[in-house]
Image 1 (cartoon, each protein chain N blue to C red):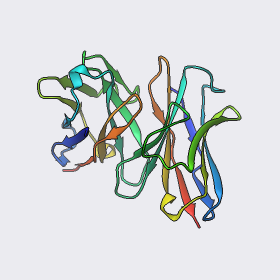
Image 2 (tube, each protein chain N blue to C red):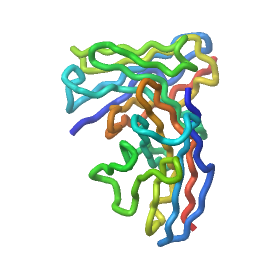
Image 3 (spheres, each protein chain N blue to C red):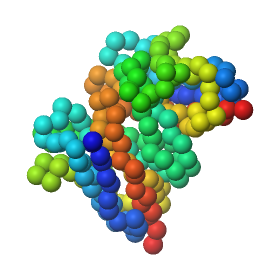
Length: 110
Length: 116
C-alpha cells in the first residue's frame, strides 16, 4: 500500500500564495495516478476542493488550483483568506490500488 | 440534492462489532456509476480510508483493516453498511461515508466511541 506524504504545517500571510504538496511512495506521478484535495475545518466533514489532480468542483473558490509539480501533486492557494485556515488532506488513488490519505497539512493564515 | 447520512450506535464495547449505516437520498445507489466509501477519523488525527462498495456488491478494503471489515449494500433501502469486528479503543473515531469517484458528497459523520 502506498504511503502519501504532506507537509505537516504551513503558514501563509493574508493575500499571499502557498503551495501544499502530496507525494506518494510509488514514485513520480504517471497516468493512472489520481489526486484529490479536501479541506476540513474544525467540527466539520471534509469538503472536496480538487478531483482528478486538477479539476475543481462548482463550489471550489477560484483561488484554489490543483496541479502536478516536481513529480508530486500540488494544491496552490493564491490570495489566501482568513477563512482558508483549515486542515487540508490529499487522497491518492491509482489503478489497481486502494485509495490512501496523506497525513494532512495544517494551514495557518497569519 | 444528494445527501448522505450515517447512523448507528455511538458507543460500542471492546471486542464487539461496530455497525453503521449510510443512507443515501437524492441518488439511487443501484443506478449510480460511483463507488460508495467509508472513511474514519480518530479524534485529533487524520483521515483513513476504510473501504468501498459498488451497487453490484463489489468491494475494496484497506489492507490494514481487511480482516475485520465488511461493507455491504442494500439497494432496496438505498443504503450501505459498515461492520467492523473486534473493536478496540483505537477504533474510536468519527466515521464518514462518501460518494467516491469525484468525491463530491460526504455525510456529516458520526462519532463512535469504543469503551466499556
